[in-house]
Length: 115
Length: 114
Image (cartoon, each protein chain N blue to C red):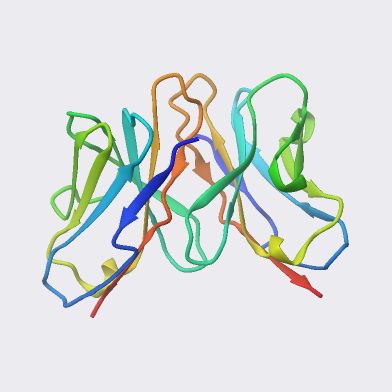
């Protein structure tokens, strides 16, 4: 399977600032990347799906202007939380998949805390 | 739309005991089914998956799961639990023939007593 990394693994920021989270596929051509959000003791909720070179498709209820997703290459996707607020504090996980693959490969997650 | 129910929020077992984690799904056709494990502060690792064929699926770390169409279930089992198995376990379902985007259950937390 693919090896997926996320950077940073954790971040603390002040309310109103923007935070960028990177998701890298280290050994895999990730034609599709996904971003999930996980609140404590809860399940993963899909936020958006992005294909390389295309605009992301956001799930219902996810603000696309707040959660900016860029999938510029087959190995890198970024999630930018703009004007972060305490309610955006969560665990953000990315995953990747490729052509002819029938599963997703998950990154280790990024813990965001907004003060 | 598909959905997944994991009825047990917590399961506590003694090390060496057998384990069964329950999962029920709702989907009109035969779904794609997955079990993932998540250690604290970590991402998800795929334990096993079912797409078609033999309804008893073998996975990593000694886990297995059985697809029972009549019960709409995909329960995860392990004959002898190790302390390192303590983690959060997620069942997931995806549409067959779709883009393999899973819908996750809420998870079951496994606690292992020595």
